Length: 167
Image (cartoon, rainbow, N blue to C red; front, side, top):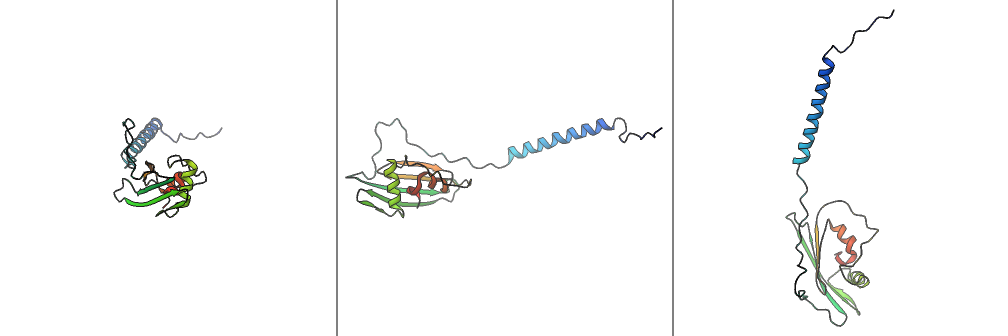
């Protein structure tokens, strides 16, 4: 005959332990929910006003395209919505005779625009690899073409518009 070992958990204690475990789980879920809903979230991306499409006529460009020549004023605003924006601005001249202006990569930028037909149509670089950093950048073009778009960061802008806004 084998000796019988006493039950390590007294009667009624198992139910109390199970209730305590259920209460602990509920408290953990409640705490996680409070933390998730009250933690500071990233600011929403800024809303960039877009001109109304129902205008009677498009706005006049600052500089008209004449005799195969297009003049652009390109502006990049870094850190949009963070209160410490920095603004960079260049001019870009694209013509059948060459490229110029204050843009450091004018030839590449004009080539990208010519291949695509417009700044808006410039395709993204499929080989570009960017971080997930959120530091919005607004890109604006005035002159021969009106263009305005906001990107999550500078790398995404350069990947999307190649040399056009790489200054």
